[in-house]
Image (cartoon, rainbow over all chains, first blue to last red; front, side, top):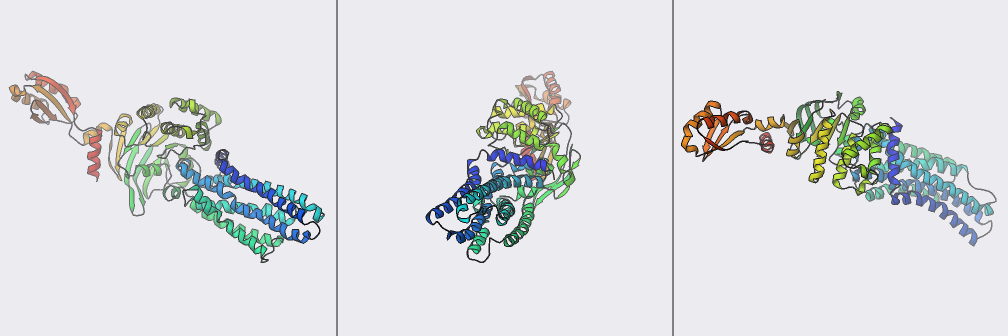
Length: 247
Length: 310
């Protein structure tokens, strides 16, 4: 497989995304809002309840807040990933693209990178801003910087990329079955449910999301799911199938 | 350049292309004619390596279309203008061409030179920096043709390239295709436009799932018979017998009939015999008011052949 060939497709998609304001807002708006909103909530709580009583609350809530980035990673790529495939279906450009000297894998990787890199970049940037702001607003109560820590590093640099990859693969599969971008996005967003389930489990005390070992177990499960989805996406993205079976 | 032997494609129980055997030589423009669902697009898709064949063989530029290892080099030889133009509306004409040029591995200098050349030939150079979304249907069609040529392919597949175009744009495209022929490009043209096929194709293959007939436009016209010489003779009854004898003398195998003052002789290749026939009638004492060649044109031949093929 020639990555240079895949990158040509990725670059073209980036050029297209730059002209789609809805994609830009959906991809970059949510991480920026989350990065500012969560520290703002903490700052507001601090303003209302000063004192060391907040320390145990922060110990519980900050790892949970960090987990929000995984939920966002499951949801955020839906817009861009569904557009990159369904958009080609709507513009009926897949046949011309498939007629070029490019393999199915190169097209899939090109499309995958186009859907993977912008949300990942936006989420990583948002998470870094979040950690910086959170340190600023909690330092007074905790007496030290809580970020970065091992838990946050696993979430941001291991679980978030795996969740974004999972979302992209899921959306490739969904996109093969639908021909409307909004429907693809809505179905694509369903992927967020398992992550919300994990978050709820953390809140209910069924799993400790602040423990690195637990996060690594979740990462291991995501690796397996990503591998299975990759096989399914690859099987879906076959030249003849696209031209004759895709609706 | 393109060779098909018993090429067959089935979708489940439905046979879309049935045992197609056809040869298209280098530098030839071959028209594929046939009703909707005749298998024209499926044939082109198989030849472009977009869908697999069920049986038979097909070679394009020496590459076997179903050989996975041949797929990439074979596609480099091919340019495709599909029924769905498949342009990116958000990108400009130049960006569309640049994207495809890069996928075909063209250097930047070659991309720019070919963009200028083909956009210029198709009257689009002035619109090169406009988003394709602002283009008319005809402009998009022409841009799709330029895109298919950006890498100088030896073989060009065109699926309905003038469908839905206004007469002026259609003529530009047809003239452009004829100009391409000078460059020794092999062109396969799917079309429903019989006049277009007749004017630009060297050979025509009529499909109706199976190959119904193939040949030059003239050969197809002759294949259905009905070709004749029609001559109107003033007061033919005055010298009817000598005139008929003279015509039979020139064309002993021709079927002659007289209706009013009109004499009709059904004969193969009437163009070759009309001068001798006119001369014979004049020598027999006939006064000719009109002489011409008639009979089936490509449209009649097409309808007859497709009807026979059913």
